[in-house]
Length: 293
Image (cartoon, rainbow, N blue to C red; front, side, top):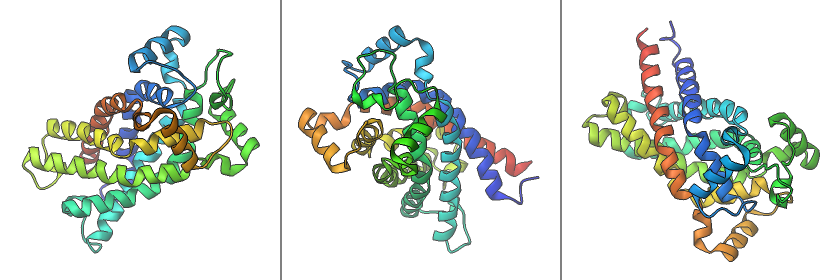
């Protein structure tokens, strides 16, 4: 029924895949943001997990999920649809993602990152502020901007009241700088590993277990490559008083050195494996089903 509407097929497959992956990875994402934020003094990922569960309970790991869940559907849709459009452009309007060579895969991934940054910035701002919210009175100024927020809508209202509509796009530059190399690495790693280990021309032809493996590895590349930029972005979006990208970089380096930019990186890369394995696998399988029914 949808075989004549490839963009609709991409939208349906990508949105379902994106939401599925977000549910899988969100608890570890919460810990990642808390480790990156200067509002908390955890000794490491395990300490962050234990303290979060002990002080706030199980559902604290899913605090702020609603906006990212919706955002995951939008992000995945933007990623795969933009990637397909870029592939079509790079092949002169005659091909799809399956016709790209590896160089074109990297270019198409970079172009897809431009669209996702526009969607992701407000979604991640809401998510980050809810994730660093605590009930204790000892919360620092970095988290006070979200303190006592009742949910995503409340965070949006406070952001607009404080900084205007542009307040929702605090951290856009850092998000864009992250998304360009991240998506090139994401699609490049997925196609590269799938083609290599699956001995096939493109990832859609690879066996299911290869798609899962390649997707998991792609997730590690997506976060590992631009992680320092993501650390700055998380700090920018959870600060009470906005600062420039350069000032935040300088402060993090002064206080923590190079290691400060990689706080929570290992956890993030590990977290990325199941989530991204799910998103690519689900996308490939749902898209294949829609194309044949």
